[in-house]
Amino acid sequence: MFKNAGRVKRTIEEYFVLTVATLILVVGVYVFKFPNNFSFGGVTGIAVVLSAIMPTTPGNITFIINMALLVLGFIFLGKSFGIKTVYVSVLMSVGLSAAEKWFPMSAPLTSQPVLELIYAIVLPAASSAILFNVGASGGGTDIIAMILKKYTKLNIGGALFLVDLFIVLASCLVFDAQTGLFSLCGLLAKSLVVDNVIESINMCKYFTIICNDPEPICEFITRKLNRSATVYHAEGAYQHNDKAVILSVMKRSQAVELRNFIHENQPSAFIAITNSSEIIGKGFRGLN
Image (cartoon, rainbow, N blue to C red):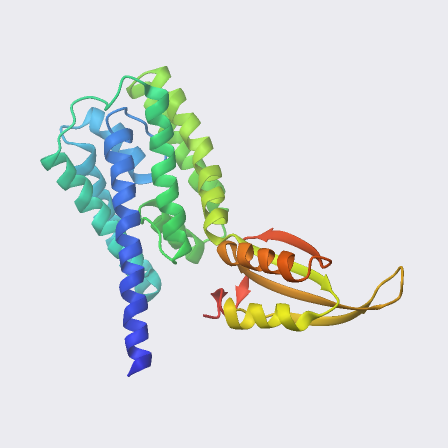
């Protein structure tokens, strides 16, 4: 019973995160991307270009394309498609259509296109990073990537980049060179922002502590921080005296507490702290 309650709680938390991340994506796309005709990135980029030559809005085009891609996903991927991706894709499509209906924008929010480009990059990229971190995606061209990965041996990343590049080039023809160049900058910066946000979200601190008395430190780690540690017995190279080496990994807030504790209680201890965003194991990713 308690196990099921914990599972339900985790599911609710996950979908809360998915909803918030999707709303951030909707704001970034609708408020900053659509009014400026920035056409980098997937389905919304296609929608910006097509809306200029078709009698409908970018939100409606995004909705139609996403629904069509969801159908293709169910046909070609079946159960492996992922309910989280379906949820995000539908919520984003409905959110954009609702925003166009309830909060129409006939012009950009400001008169500063560079400022708006920054927000058009950062908000969707941060949203994508959060979604990737909980095992979901924004749908759209990610669905095409999943299908191609399953049935072909193509370089998926390269293929999707070429598609996005083609969309950017099309924006130069449909709109003007300035819009195309802004879109190209957005395309090049987007992947960098996503990678940096993912690393920041997953950032942990890896401690290597060399000390004379490991017991107080290990007790603080296990009882106060609710983490674990590995202890090695070593020998100092200069004086050949006995030393203990403690290895432990924890979140950044916990790292501050441990560092302060060691500084106050064992000031002679040697501490090496390393940043790491790829920690896989119990208590972190993969084996929770």
